[in-house]
Image (tube, rainbow, N blue to C red; front, side):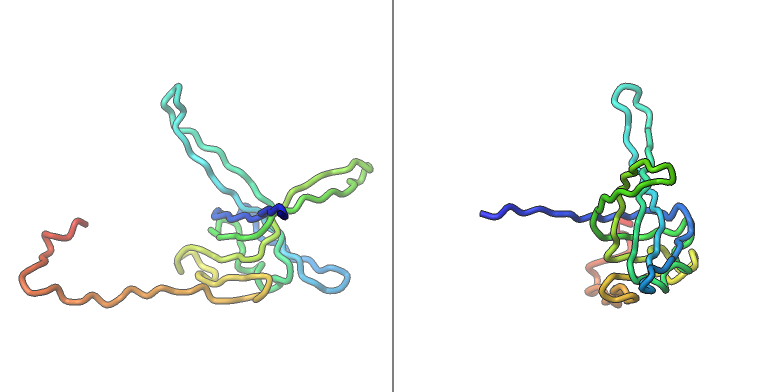
Length: 153
């Protein structure tokens, strides 16, 4: 039986800097940005809340229209895969780096945060609209059965 493996990353976090787009020699756009994700837990010994931030470098191929919307502080959803690669620095030392290769990037947050909320960017479709859910119109309660006092919120 063949063995299986999974390489899937999902991040929801805030951009640590504005995205930067560069082009390869064949004019393929490469957009890079970093995403901060936080983890919060209560220390069992002291009872104090602790928090740590993890920074992930993200690479989005063929996303030339994305960079103006991906600005520092914006909240994003990123889905993709991990990739580790190496390169030689200016001193000839081999450097290893792990990046998230994004397949989908969706801006989160409301219109008050600016940008283009609810729009996503993906490898297959450079720009697509995320599905919008519209609340159903409230139906009138059956007569005499439900009142405002019955609603828990």
